[in-house]
Each structure stands twice: as C-alpha cells, then as structure tokens.
Length: 93
Figure 1 (cartoon, rainbow, N blue to C red):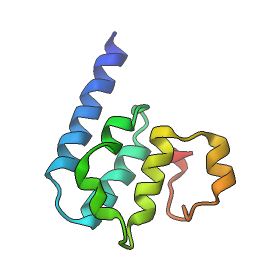
Figure 2 (cartoon, helix red, strand yellow):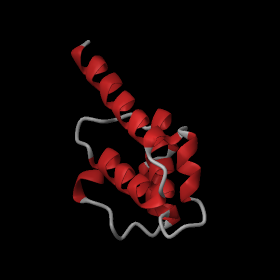
Figure 3 (spheres, rainbow, N blue to C red):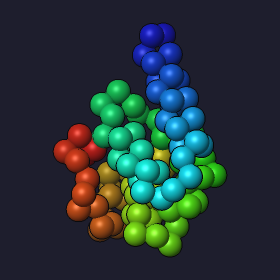
Figure 4 (cartoon, rainbow, N blue to C red):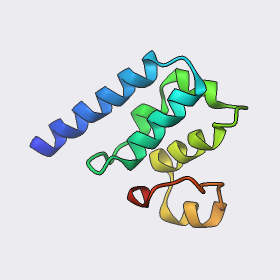
C-alpha cells in the first residue's frame, strides 16, 4: 500500500507542476525529471496534462515523444521507432 501511495503522490506532484508551467523548455525539463525518477512507474496522467501540447512543433517536441513512450509504449516501441532520444538518461532505460 505504501508503494501505491508514493506513486499517487509522485504523479500528483508532476501533474501539478506540468499544469503550472507555461513554457516549452521548463515542460521538457519536467518530462526529463519525471521519466528519470527511479520511483515513478506510471506516466499516463502526466501525459494527459493539456499544457504539454505546448511542446508540439518546438525544439522540445521529442520530449513529448519520450513521455508518450513511457505512458503507452513498450521497449519494442523504443527500439523500433528510433526516436531522437540522444539526451535520455541511463535511469530512463
């Protein structure tokens, strides 16, 4: 039960932060932080935050692709798509 509560708290934290941010660069940084978090395993709620649409068409659009992969993708998707993930962290794999 403690693990479930921690997941819920982490998700709420990142959703609130993403909702409050208004610029693409900080949103991309937040995605990097969330996807590299070693205790976070659920990303669909974060991916559904409307503010993240601000990343589309920007130099940070690949951050949204990374979050989409974490929210609804698989390891096979990652390997097959060849997304431009040059900046990913070891903790994200």
